[in-house]
Length: 193
Image (cartoon, rainbow, N blue to C red; front, side):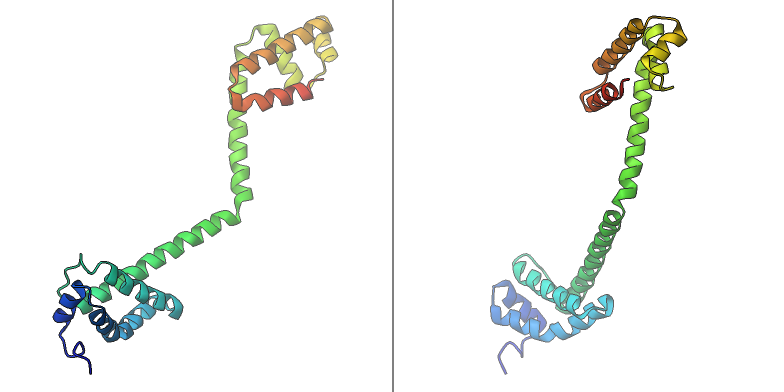
């Protein structure tokens, strides 16, 4: 029997504060089984329970100079329960992240729809302040899908005039839209009949 086995918890704590490894080993020997039981009772996982108890003892050693402990048994039991709770919170957060990652297509699709709706409203706002004929040519071309000859015929203007109004509308859009929206202008030009 070593001299530390005969010491009280208070004496062991004092020796631990002085950095005595043998005192630490005695505290570990006295309390690891009951702490493992507490950790397992709360976590229902032997490996997690063992890891938690090890972390608590590592924390005890690392902070030995900072701790003022009256009751080592209560302190360690509380530390284990707190660690189990932290483990539970971390696992719950991991599960939430996995759940979010499992359905990115749906959330990305929703974000894309919202972004598209916002962009369309922004473009509509710009189109509304265009000169009347420009606005009409743009709407007939883009909203109704008419070609330049069809727009010209419906409005009773020359095709070159309809094309000039559409070009002017696209230039205004290009100037008024911020950089992230430039791809829309490129798309509009590609789709331009």
